[in-house]
Length: 128
Image 1 (cartoon, rainbow, N blue to C red):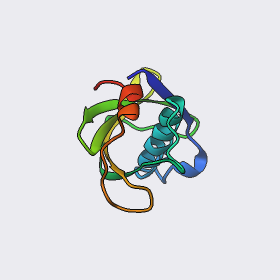
Image 2 (image 1 turned 180 degrees about the vertical axis):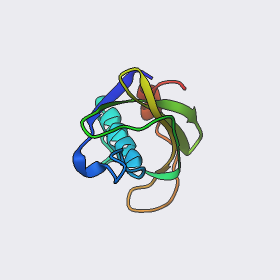
Image 3 (image 1 turned 30 degrees about the vertical axis):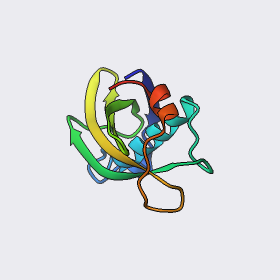
Image 4 (image 1 turned 90 degrees about the vertical axis):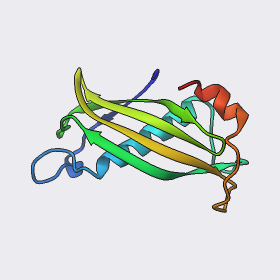
């Protein structure tokens, strides 16, 4: 995974244990994916295709805390005809915090109708 997105953990993202509340990790993945897509020149807003998340799994190896700089590496893990899996690896320095995998389905904009993942996106996003 060559793309890394850095997030500084904010106070409001933490829970009573002073660690990042679990649901915020999916929001972090969403931010990281958006920045990765944009770094590839892929802007889906107003384009010929869109995508939705079909499945998300998160596994924690530790916790991020207020003020930590959380680095999230992003990359394709699997290509399907109308879907693809994106892997996320989050760490604070050398300390692993979480891994996640999200399955995205390519759809026709404004619908829930699956469409093939565009070849141009496959080309710039790379191999698993």
